[in-house]
Structures are given as C-alpha cells and as structure tokens.
Image 1: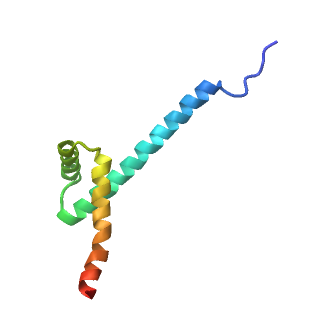
Image 2: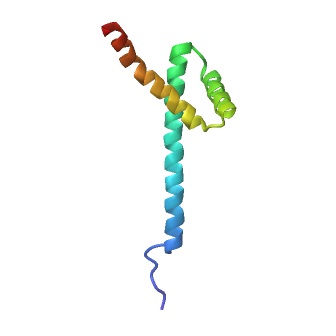
Amino acid sequence: MNAIRLAPPATEVEVLRREVEKLTQKLAARRILERAKAILQAEFGWTEEETYLRIRRLSRQNRVPMREVAILVIESRETRPTEQAERRAG
C-alpha cells in the first residue's frame, strides 16, 4: 500500500526555511542599499553606477559590508534635520 506523502521530510523543510531566511536578509540589505543610493544621488547628483561604486569602495577600504556603509549613510541623513533645527533654536 502506498502512503500519501503530506509534507516533505523535516530536513527538507528546515533547508527551505533557511533558504527563505537567507533570501529575506538579502532583500532587506538590497532595500537598504537602494535607499542609501537614492540619498547620495539626490545630494551629490551622482549616477546610480557612480553611487554604487563609491559605496562599494568605502565598503572595501573599511572592510565592512556594503549594507553597513548604507546604514551609516541613511542614519547620518536622518539625524541632520534634527541637528540643524537644534542649531537654529540654540
């Protein structure tokens, strides 16, 4: 008698879960990089390729992932309006 297979073996499910998690992290990193690129392009007028290459160069020079460089770009721009408002008020 043939048994009906309702679910893949546990190991296969775990492999798929890990793959989904890995892809989710890659997508999140790509979104962060795209956001940082947009900020730099708007601020400096660089092309998308120039911006990517500059982020990559900084990443390599500092031996940190591009995602970390992108996060620093985003965070530095997000704090600027607050700092500027404080300077005007103070």
